[in-house]
Figure (cartoon, rainbow, N blue to C red):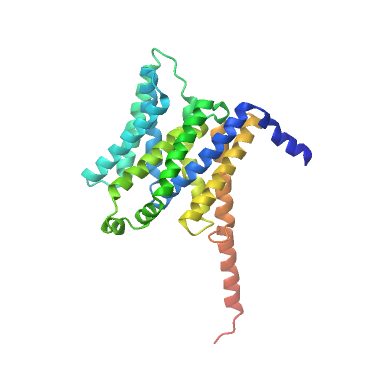
Length: 296
């Protein structure tokens, strides 16, 4: 037992691991809280669309020598505006608008990256797939500021967001600024994805946005409970993935996502409320009880 604890404590002596640890905790909480709204509203593809659109901003910011963080955020907000425009001005459903914008921005990002690489070597692997162990002090400050902004906004507007999430028409009839809530939530998702780039990468960030809240959804009945439990599961997944990345020389993003996916599979099978194996066991018991009853 002592040797295990010593092994776990060993990486904490390094400054880079301490930064990674803090970033993992922040990203775990942030993704779970914002992702809960995406899951409940059945808008998971929105996170994917915004995540893939960041390539455009990354390529342009790199070519202009600007901040990759700001470039990615602007690109994410522009893609969200494009989705909202198509959804509001055409008869297409939300999923079609998101699919069109996702593919268009992703293709444009690949073209821009190809053009930029003719003159400058650009390595976006860390942003695509994440490298939590390479988080710098500046990255940590950016991530912390983004989390403070998003979580603070959610705390201030929780009642309004709760009403709007479960009854959009009722919220509109009650006079709530539904369009502003739409934009606020979309902006929060974009900021969350950009803040999580260095940890899990834009390709895998959707998994961290959706999987921990989905796991919590199988275990608890209410939104605030789902957000809280999802945050705990997100932190656990991030920390476990971080240690796996350190000890086994694995890419941090995929390691985190695999841990989160493993927790989801366990909840899917063994959840006391909705677990597949538990439900089948109850059905078997109920059938047996019916068979034991005397015929009337």
